[in-house]
Image (cartoon, rainbow, N blue to C red; front, side, top):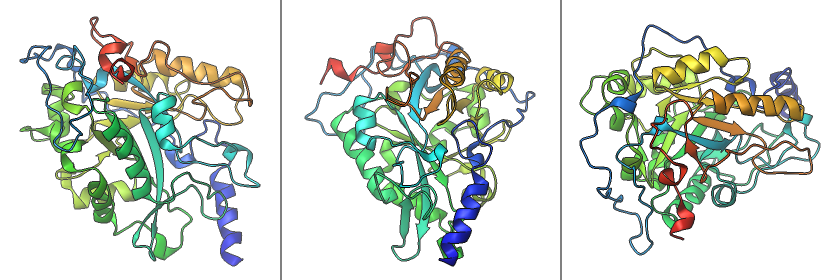
Length: 375
C-alpha cells in the first residue's frame, strides 16, 4: 500500500497541466541551433536509376510479393509524412484519470487497418523477468495490449514479415521509469535494450545511425552531404528512436559514443553531431521551431492532439502539424470514435503521403507505399 500511495501521488503530479496528450517528459519545444544547417536532401544526386529493383533483406519471406515503389531511389525518409500513435500500447484502466481515458487497438491492427507507421512504447525493467515490460504508470495506469517489450516487437515483426516492401516503421521507445522502484530502473540495462531489439529484429532489418553515417565522421555531416537513406533501401525495416533528452540519452551515448554501433537514433535539440531526430510536442505553439527543424533536414516528430482537448484545438494542431511538414505525427485519435467528431488522418495517404514541405514534385503517395496493390 505504501508503494501504491507514492506512485499515485507522483503520477498525479507528473500529469498535471499537460494539454497536448503527451506525457510531460515527452514534450518538445527545444531551442534549435540555427547555425548548424543540414541541407534538405532533395537535391542530392541519385546515381541509381529509379526503376532499378531494391534488394529485399535476407529474412523477408520470398513467397510473398514485395511492394517496390517507382521512385524508390529518389524519395528519401525526410520526403514522407507518416501517421503514428502516442502510447500505442495503451488500454484504459479502471478509474483512470481523464487524460488516460483512451484505448488503442493492438499494434498489428493499427498497422493493418489504421494506416499507422509509427508506434510508441514505454518500457520498464523487470528485475524478476530480466526483461523489459511495456506499460504507462505502474499500478496507476498499467493497461497494455502487449505486456513485454519483446512481445510488442514480435507483433510488429510478424506484421512486417507478412507485408514485405512496406515503408520503414518508426518505433519510439521511452524509458518510463520515473516512479519505478530502484531495482526497476533502466540505468545499466541499455545493452539489454539493444539486445532485446536485435533478438526480434535482426540487424539487416533495421535502419541505424551507422547506416546514415556511412563513411562520414558524424550523422550530422552525413545528413548535410548525403541526405537520409532512400525509401528503397529502408523497405521492410524498422527505425528505433530513444525518447529521452537527459539521463538515459546521456548514458546511451556513453555506451555508443557519437551513436556508433547503436541501435537507436537519439532525440536531440539540433546541432549535436549524432542528432537526426527532434521532437516538439505542440505544433501550434512550436511552429517556428518545427519550420526550422524541417528546413534543416532533421526528422521532426510532433503531436497534434490530446485526450480531453476540444475538437477545435485538436484540429488546429492537426492542420499545423501537416502544413509545417512534420515527418512523424503522433495522435491519440487514429480512428473515429464516439468521443467526438475529431480524429486524425493524412488526407491522400496510402497510408503515408508526400511531405508538403520537403518532397520533390514527382512524389506521389502511391510511390511511398501501396500494399493494397499487391495483397
